[in-house]
Image (cartoon, rainbow, N blue to C red; front, side):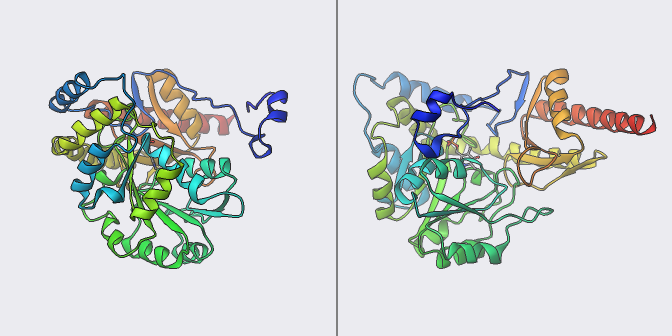
Length: 372
Ligand SMILES: *Cc1c(COP(=O)(O)O)cnc(C)c1O
């Protein structure tokens, strides 16, 4: 594993000594189903509106720090007020600001792994203690009793719904219990909310629980991962605290303009989202039919699978078929798991066929080896 130079290990803050220099380990491939992006891209009509907005945006002036025009559009969409919304440079920035504002030494963040690894990473940067309430190792569903108990002692609880990478939705009743139990704040990360069943969102709870935050992003359903725009809906004083710690110009003018155009035309993404949902069913069913593959049902735009020698299968997918998927086999709780983003029909067809061939080949090799 890469590590910081000896000189840097001396100079960085003590709690950062064992950080690994970031290695994106990125290989360009024909088919990239590794990052849960929307591989269909922005619909042409929306892209045209976006291009027009971008062309009309001067870049010589600093951006509106709070993205108020965009905030108003997001507030109108979600039926809340401007004061309830804060925009960030991707959802990631808001997650970082959350631990910056509310974490720190002596504070605890409760995490429900396997889940998005950034929560624990950002918490560690801010010297926040992370408490893991592990999901069931078979179903990947949260341990509700343990979660509510941990929430009683927590400064922050983060729940992902649908969860990345396991695909399940957090039940509303559970989120309500966690909010009631927690003396601090509860963030529900709905980065994949648009792909879930209608009614899966916990936003309805915002009116009754002022310690609830709901995170959204335009990176997934709205195909703007490269533009970096996410937002949180919460009580006005929570928004104020998040605003107080943020870098004031983090959301640039081009992002604000592009995001506003996408939000105003959000209905035009509906057919794409519907197609991804239909493809998700097809992908899940096809993967489940492959002997030696277990797939978990998902409400996101990805499917988690387990298969023997997953790491090797993932490498062969990349090297022999030029298909990239995410390897989780080294992540705690996710032995031999791969996460496959739902792509276009062609991309999904390619990964289904390739995976079926590789899994059969690996099984044959295993048997051959056993007979030697
Ligand atoms: C992708 C993702 C986000 C946010 O991504 P941004 O591109 O930073 O907006 C947040 N949470 C989860 C679980 C994600 O998978």
